Image 1: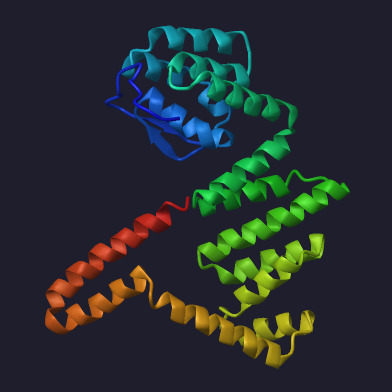
Image 2 (image 1 turned 60 degrees about the vertical axis):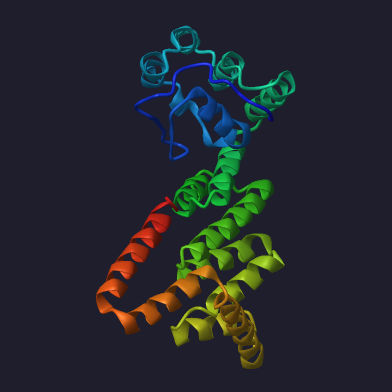
Length: 276
């Protein structure tokens, strides 16, 4: 996609909230831009009278809205619904429409389990860690005991451990990585568990982990040393520099420091909430 794109419809005064993606959209072009790389984050929940009504009233896309209603009445499915939007938007080139059509066709031939696994992975990539965890847990509840599903379950537990680690929930991260290692015996799962356990302060939990995986105190000390080196690297980060600025500001003015600290904490809160 390149060059200048003219909007086909109005820009909405009131956005439509894509619940499955956790995103507000204001135009058909914004929806198409999202579809291009995140089609797995959408699902049948977009196929509603409310969405068609939003297209009609907010974007004045009357003809498109009517076509989508007819598709829903004819039970044509998610693929046909999306392709109608892609075709009528005027956003995509012919090659791009063909590519998205193939993606949707692939989704049709994959199981619901496989599509939801990809959706959860995309949530992870977008930093929606809590939403990814919830999707992964739902998937685990529907996994079978077949060898292929067991391998996939191992991957899911590993990814869920990474999501928890990203949210600084290291106890849960360690448990997820351990479960992943039990199922798939991936060396990187055990390595990730070993890294996460270094963040735990509970000595009994750490000791049990070391004994279970036959890690010596010398090896653990080396792991902690590597962690400390990583911590030193974070001191060069923008976040660490911000806290250093707050400390310096505190020496000058407690009132200004308190105001700046409140602003920074609110920013971090918003970033953390975005994990959902």
